[in-house]
Image 1 (tube, helix red, strand yellow):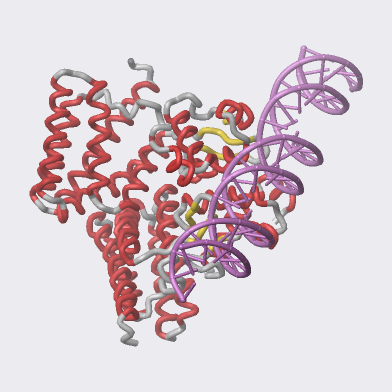
Image 2 (tube, rainbow over the protein chains, first blue to last red; image 1 turned 45 degrees about the vertical axis):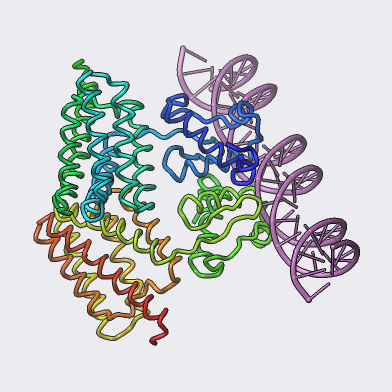
Length: 225
Length: 225
DNA sequence: GGATTGCAGATTGTCAACAATCTACATTCG
DNA sequence: CGAATGTAGATTGTTGACAATCTGCAATCC
């Protein structure tokens, strides 16, 4: 990307938002962990001002919390909050499905089916490292295709926030084929052009993912693994 | 409130978030209007640093936008964006309704009915100034009673953002009694304990409000008043 | 030996200064 | 006369300094 374009359209604080978010979601600053402004500013080679601005944005997104005079901390998300996030996420994903059932082009539906096939291949090969980014891309495609940027932004924030529940634990251990069967039901619902049925199928997928995730959480609490 | 408590729990930037938001939602800085940092910081008697932090938060909430080297501007919301906001808002309000149908206590339902009665009285008296805050309080009570803070926060942000579409035009001119009849249908749906019917009734209320608002917008464009 | 107090260093919150950028106006050029 | 250039003032983005607060450790007290 072109230096001039970047200088004209980006600020330090904007870039720092992205960088600090990556550090958090990548687990480099763990949930509960302190964000040391001096150290972080030093590491990025900037002053604390733009970093603090970036942290304000991340606070609004629920990734960090500011405690006066003590600094910013990466938030923890407990199972109750995860449940709340999933409820909202299911409603929004359902809305995305409903919208697609009404408005999706035939080409968009064909693209969705193409993505299903890719995920099937990865699932058959039990190639989890291939499946995960395809899964993310599939979800991302859907919320963008719904054509409501506000829906997409809210959804994205929720997904990011869920990362704080257990980094990378959003990776469901519970069977790639099961997950992709749900994806396929979703896409067929879109193709059926039935908004209500599609909303239900989309919400159900999120709710099944929630059940898988939360039961994994419960299991580890009991030390049964 | 107690000075000590405030000093221990609030920061300048936090207070400034509230103040600047009030100035924006109150129409003091109009949609499209420039946020002059120097002037505003001078007015509040603070330095630009905490003000810039506050503006970052307001940007995340969609109330302002930062254009590099030109400053922050209060956002405008056009009818397309208003429609998108309403779609998301209807989905979230529907979720609140669904949750209430499942979980509301008898006392909460009685409180909802009490609020309906108050709004009826204001509607009968054609006392719009009394109805409006009661209406806001009714909605606020509902999303809080649903017991999902994430839902409540997202919903609140959407409502604030709608204020940029037409300040105070969220005030539907289209008949207080009609609006409260919808409210009553919502509350009866909650009392019926049918989650699906309640979700529909809640979403329908938001969608009717949207129709009233957007048709008022269309009418003024045609200069038909 | 546990509780309390004091202190030093680390860190945060805010401020003011400076450089960079933008905008509006005046001047010059073709 | 319109387009291009130059300039001054306003404003923004960032930096570094300073005061306030917190934290951890050592010393003192009961």
